[in-house]
Image 1 (cartoon, helix red, strand yellow):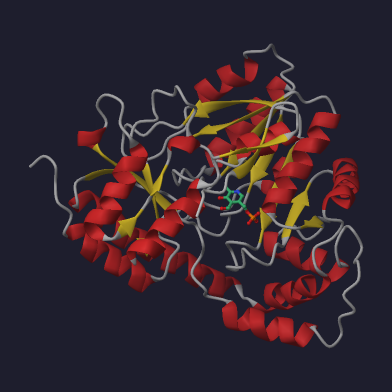
Image 2 (cartoon, rainbow, N blue to C red):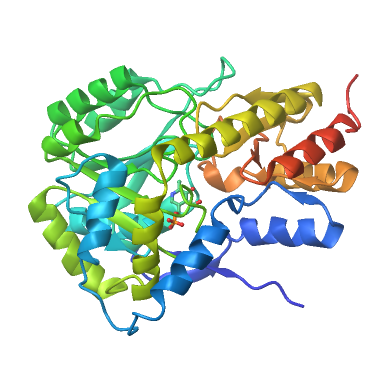
Length: 398
Ligand SMILES: Cc1ncc(COP(=O)(O)O)c(C=O)c1O
């Protein structure tokens, strides 16, 4: 069967067949072909499936399968606001964080924003989303030298001001960060607030891993929103393990949220009605203690996978949040490493499939070398089996 090309947005807003986001499917197909453990894709373990089934079954008899308010069913908006701990917020309910990000970028573009800036490595959908919204993009590297992901805020300041003090730039911040696990601390959020205020930029927070912080305190979202220069894009995809239900939200100041609602009407108009109703049940029925239990289970899986990768000879970046650990074989970083070949070699040697991260870096980036991403979003037994297999990894250099 011929390889089907994925669709990528180009600089002039059109789309073309290309490859940067098809890597997930390719690596998952490899895992299926080899009967290997798939740590390439970020699909969360099914912790909430039974609840979703029950909530959807309960929602169906009262459903009429019609449009809801474009802003979303009011009870869901309130439930999301309560989930975020910002009860006076009125989010726009969207079809997932991806749509929220695209809406936000469109609104910002229409308000004179010219460029999106994000951290490198970056979620490989970002360039396409920025291009669809007609924005240029650039990035600031995360530093891995210490074995933990670190953000140099002075470097970020320089990137924000390189076009003058009124930068017309949106800073897209994903914390916890895919793929590095960088998780901003309260002091860093404070400095970012100051940076944004002093440079006249805007922040778009990609909050999709919000419930997977393994130490850092809750970010000061209320303060950031009050500044009027912040938008928060989130979803239930990861927090309640429902990537296929397409339920997300966007929070912003009232006038920006109104503009976002108008853009959303031109995209999906509304998330499916029965899914919104089921989400009200899940959000109001899941206690903070249960969410904390999920977070702890993910932290435990991280604490199993990271030492196993190190013991198998990988240089590992220890994530402070999120679903992924970045690792590479130091022996493969010389010259021009073929990251895809390294991922395939591991898959064939031990039956564990990571994601090659080439497409998460700029083509000429000096930090690009040989990084692989290992997901610990899979079930604990799959993580345990992956660690057993990694222990059998043949080493190129003793
Ligand atoms: C950083 C980041 N943002 C957004 C998304 C997409 O979220 P959603 O499924 O809610 O569209 C993902 C999914 O993996 C992600 O890793």
